[in-house]
Image (tube, rainbow, N blue to C red):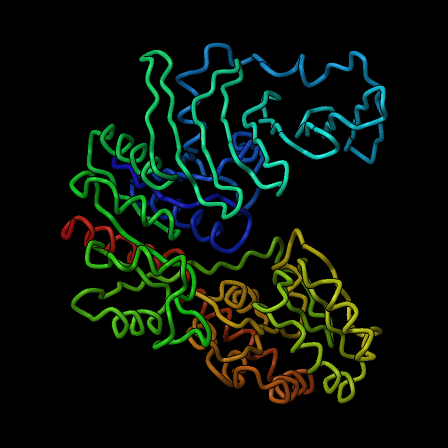
Amino acid sequence: MRTVFILIHALGYAGRSAAVLDQCRMFINMGLKPTIVTFKYEPRFDEDISTRKGDFALPAGASAMNIYRELRAPLTHDHGADWSREDDESSEGLTVSRSVTGKQTRLDYFDHTGRVVKMRMLSSSKPTKTLFYRNGLVVMQRDYEDTGACGRERSFDIVSGKTTEERYFTPDGLCYVTRHLDPSSGRQLGVYSHNPSAGTSRRFAHNTPWHADWLESLLRSERDQPFVIAQHPTAMLKLLETDPSLSSRLYLSHVNLFQTPFTVGSELRADYAQPFRRVKEMPVVLSLTEAQAADMRTTFGADNCDPFVVPNVIRDRRTRDSIKKVPGRVGIVCRLHPEQKRVDDLLHAWVDVVAAVPNARLEIGGDGEARKELEKLTTRLGVGDSVSFLGWLDDSVDFMASCTLTVSTGRSEGFGLSIGESLAAGTPVVSYDINYGPSDLIRDEVDGLLVEDGNKTQLACAIIRLLKQDRRTAKMGRRSAERMQALFSMAAIEPKWKAALEMADARS
């Protein structure tokens, strides 16, 4: 059984991670063995993987690995050890303040002069971090893994407070990786991988060659040549640094590659510019939409980059079928980012909407750094009585299914998965016509409405139209659900992935 390695930074709980897990389900159906590989240090990696539920659970037949876990495991002699515990818990000669908030416990340790020397944080009695102070300033932090042992120790510049060194430990206290950083710029000054049994330490300039070296050893360990799909810009760089003969390689971007105004002719995003300088070395480039594929051909030249289009799976993720529409409910679900999601545009448009449809209600699902300012704006605009901020929703698709319509005001997208999920749940969408996704998913006047990007007047008018035309809006919802099932179901997308993998074998 051939392995498909899916390279990402971290496995989260948002659209990209949902797409990756759907890929795993399709690969299992194809008789392959999907393995998600993550490169971010995650202290509770094992715990997170084992406690995932629903659509975000790792499907049976798939596995997940993290570089730090894989490097640590063979060097650990006592998995139950807790090398720093005695030092962390010591209160000799100190006074201790204890405060409890729910499951969180904070312990502050003071010397005889009343100066704090240590602070510990615990969650459900398990340590999460310990800070050490010198002259009132933090000089070191310990982070704890799901076993309870310290897995990482960070040292800080006493002037700037920025990280100067990171050390990573086994539960029994053996340091297997050291990273040095320039506190003024954050630039890595060297990564050292330690092998105590051989008595050697190997230096790498920064994370990319270190991770690539580990990745290449992973690929060499496979009996049959694996497929590798890099789905993050740093993962692309790491795969590019491995021996190309070891794997059948594919490169997939989940985002719009361009900077503002996010269309062909614009500068590439800084994080993607570096790997795509080497686009000729990418045997198969994948795109989520035909529009982005066309723009990539224009940007890089069709001879250098001819993307194969494999959209994300769009499924009806409702937890139950009998979800009734709430008349007048308009929803938006997104991270409340001050610039990217432009919820402020929707609030300005909402002034006209609620004036025309007094019983309309705008309900905003999500959270983020812009929430407080958006709440203040709601008050200033005088629409507070008709707007609710719901925070993060456990069942966001159920919420979208209950709405008369949903709205998307993002500045740029790679695909627009939340738009698709709303359509699949039978709820039409009013969206700015941006790159990429809205026009690929929404047929204007058929299963939603597309309006000029940034035109708040058109946005308000479109929302008002759908609120006032109940029958037409309901018909749009039925059509959109049928189309999502026909074009973006797992059964529809799986053959595209099969063709992409065959292409990778032929070109790699």
